[in-house]
Image (cartoon, rainbow, N blue to C red; front, top):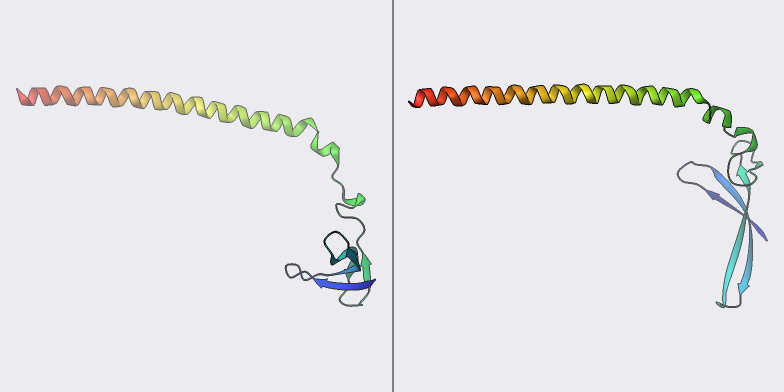
Length: 116
């Protein structure tokens, strides 16, 4: 077994792995297994254990905040406001179309009078 240090180019963090080489009988090739040990502290040179992947237990999201009824009522209010705005805009659109039609009729009548 050996220790392998790999630097992540995106974050600049150096990760430390325990690497084990073995012979794959099926493929008849050498293979390796890597196990994450932790991160390398650049200042002290110590290895900081990272544990398992995923969130740490201390940083878990509180479920009470997600399922509280207040945000739901806020969303309902926003939806009702949007629905009212849509109704108003549809009514205004209908009135504008009616006004447009009346203007077109008036123009047609004026054109007929001028043509006569």
